[in-house]
Amino acid sequence: MKIERDQRSGKVSLTQKGYLQKVLQRFNINDGTKSVSTPLAHHFKLKVTMSPTIVKEREYMTRVLYASAVDSLMYAMVCTKLDLPQVISMINKYMHDPDRGYWEAVKWVVWFIKGIIDVGLVFEKDSSGKQKCVGYVDSDYAGELDKRRSITGYVFTLFQTPVSWRFIL
Image 1 (cartoon, one colour):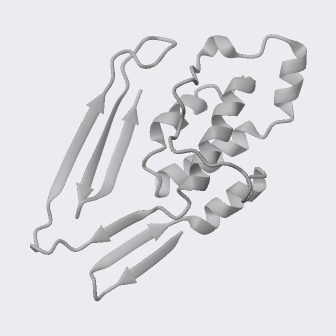
Image 2 (cartoon, rainbow, N blue to C red):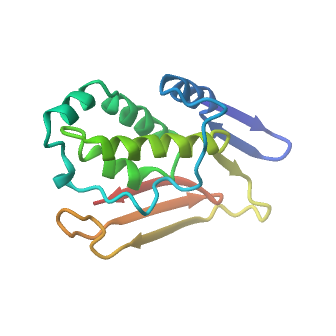
């Protein structure tokens, strides 16, 4: 993690560009590879019933670094990437028996990371001198497809920068 402090402007920034570049290299995402603008596209409908049913598919998935990719993305999520908790929770649920559709979703997230590799957290002194803590919460209705449960998340900000967040399934 890279931490930069600018005392003159009162800013502190946290990024993980070096780590994320290593993740992209590990999964063969190079400069010619596309990047995408959303953490997960709407067409991904991940359900437990999508687990591989044929032997050929299971053999293919044994050669895929699915768990390693999810773990790498999870580390980025915990440190600086607040746009990933929901999608990481979804792809992490199927770690025990993923199929090619899950792997496509993981690759999509890595392509998303490629587009936001320079984005991090910036803590900036408020010009008014007030340290205001603000909380936000949101939920959907039955967004979890297997058990039809609602998905909820929250984030608390200080100096207009997230300091605490959680995704609840």
